[in-house]
Image (cartoon, rainbow, N blue to C red; front, side, top):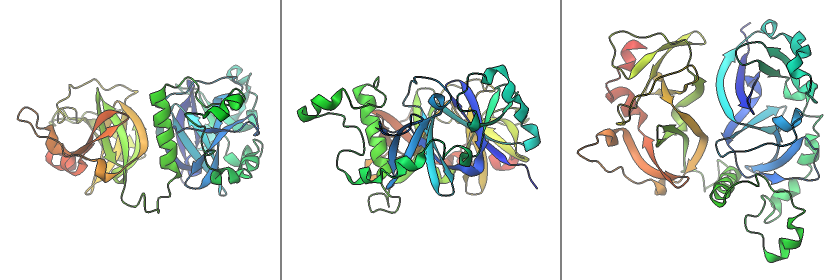
Length: 361
């Protein structure tokens, strides 16, 4: 029997892992409807394609009194027996394999866990470089946080102007404004607009006419540039570690690494995009992509959004210039959070970018 795979993430400088079989999906932090009637462990809820999903801040569940949020945060949706719950995290990492014997559950007595209020959520602590906390399966704590109490509020989905906190309350709401909890109160007007748009995108059914023709992208950054990558070619997100250099290859090929027993070639496309090369560290990230039978890991600086819905009508052609040949690796340009984003043509990048990935993988 093979070792189970764990999905790791960071929340407020603490590394966590959970069995990957519980992961349903991951997306950028949206606007959250605050629920004052719910259990203190439940921050609020979102409308995910017509289903009310309770949202937790795991930092609060483990004893903290407040949390700060950022547009770069993500929500991981866990699914256990069709009962779903989302948790807010600061960063998602890689898939890792481990056996239960490698998880020292006796480490629950470790001093670092002395102040945890919700120990039933923790299976153990791996004393690695990150002191990773292993979460129990959701069935161990979903009932405890009274998820069903939120599910019973599903009528909120059908009530106009209640699916999210209003961005511009009317004068009739002013008397109640002080009593209404607001998610991410420190957010700027621009940030609230982005959070609101993300929430609206999540409401849309993937089978609805509005989303039948949309492009779903992962949005990443390289230096100061933003790029969109078609989610159909994205396999997973990983951290780069234990790279083995590959001799006699162009500088764009960073090296190979062992990804669960398979050799994965890591490439850096900065030179193709006329961006300065940057050193690769143990904390560097990559997106594992598969296109036309070629699999490779592409180095990125940041993963800004794992599931961004883009209307094809919003895509504009990339304008070629004599000084910059990088446009040939773009299928178009679009706007993301008021910034310009290039949409990568991965087939051309992997096969025509002088990367010879197929010869070294």
